[in-house]
Image 1 (cartoon, helix red, strand yellow):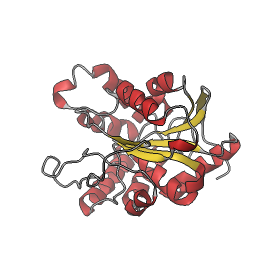
Image 2 (cartoon, helix red, strand yellow; image 1 turned 90 degrees about the vertical axis):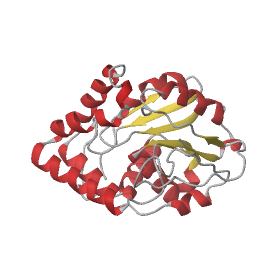
Image 3 (cartoon, one colour; image 1 turned 120 degrees about the vertical axis):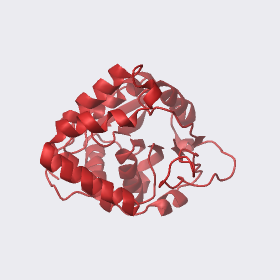
Image 4 (cartoon, rainbow, N blue to C red; image 1 turned 135 degrees about the vertical axis):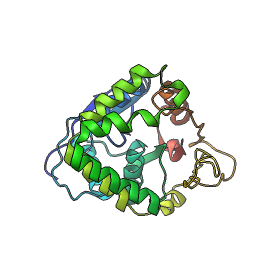
Amino acid sequence: MNSLLSYRDEGNGTPLVLVHGFCESKEVWKDFSAILSSKFRVITPDLPGFGESKLEDPNTSMDYYADKLHALLNHLNIHKCILVGHSLGGYIGLAFAEKYEHRLWGLGLFHSTAFEDTQEKKDNRDRTIKFVEKHGVEAFASTAVTPLFYPPKREELKKEIELMIRIAAGSSKEGVIAAAQAMRDRKDRTNVLKKIPRTSCSRQRRPGRHPGKKPTAMLPAPPQRGTLFGRRGSHGHVRTQKRYAEDSRRLWGVGGEGVRGTFIY
């Protein structure tokens, strides 16, 4: 844990840390940053083994990634922030909230969950690891990224898909394997969400529509300040990131003691 994560630092105001997902990099947040940096100090790091950050220890965990983020915040002299994570980034955000809740104004999850992997999902992680070990990251990126996009929109999103394939292919083999193992072995952190005040959850995973997946949570009481009900996009966060960024900016306002809370898309 000696080297610092590579990162981009833009704008001024309440610190907002955007953590990318599996086989991504800080580049996926460029459009978010363009909108949010008018109100926030936006920090976008590369996780170990992705983008420009090196992986020092192949025996990673969500706690390891959380500690790397914690070290980055210390380096930047940021005492509190809003932390938003996509997919893997959301798992890391939950681990960070568990260890360093006092460093957070708020927590956001994009297409992520507090549940641990099901056995079926764990098996899929193992298949990913074996595929990458045998065929490499570029082959994995070329086959795994496109199916994440809604089929009727793939032609329209051709440029976005090509960008995501390029970003994924730039990941290190060791980083992809380590992250897949860490996701497979992560623990359930639904208790973390329960401890965070003013939390609301979305219906992003609906029983019956996504076989084998659990719903993120049941809808609780009506939302209050510091909460946001998510709207599930039909083709992922890449296409709808401007809308998400605008929603996030309205949710969090300009910072201060009143921003405490959680949102889940």
